[in-house]
Length: 131
Image (cartoon, rainbow, N blue to C red; front, side, top):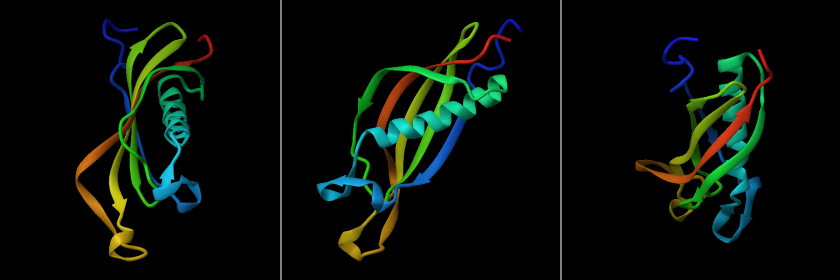
């Protein structure tokens, strides 16, 4: 391992359209677990890239639901490695709305947001097998 671990700062980003089938609440709101599931997908790719293994999610800390995610949104989910332990990795996670459906303009209308909306942030810990 080098003086500064090359895995630190590794960033993985996924984009996903949020289908209307995932709306659970009035106003086409999607539950917060949707973003946590996407965080798991990003963390899996982080583990594959850092350690050649899918790893396991050990837990979340500091989960913050800051803005709604709605069906018809396009979200960008990013994970960045902030700490590398012997078998654990700490990943800073964010779910940002980059496009939003505009049903007020018609059934399939949507727009790219000039200013993306940070919807959910969290810190996650993943573990990988011993080398």
